[in-house]
Image (cartoon, rainbow, N blue to C red):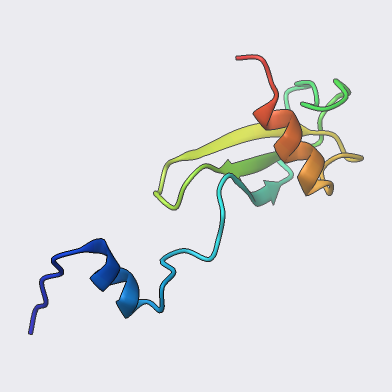
Length: 88
């Protein structure tokens, strides 16, 4: 049995009024690669020890990777702020 929704409000009503509880961009997986390549930390410029995934949306493949040093890898708010304020 297949339903066709004529409006977004009908679809949202099915999910209790909210489709996503997560807001984006969000911090995703934090990894410690074998070889970090000596790239600079996005916040302080120190040698990095890990990668951090920034989830841009719920779509698969819409993630960005940034580098973070040991001191800043646990500070999610600072990582998001630095990513959003970076110069392209």
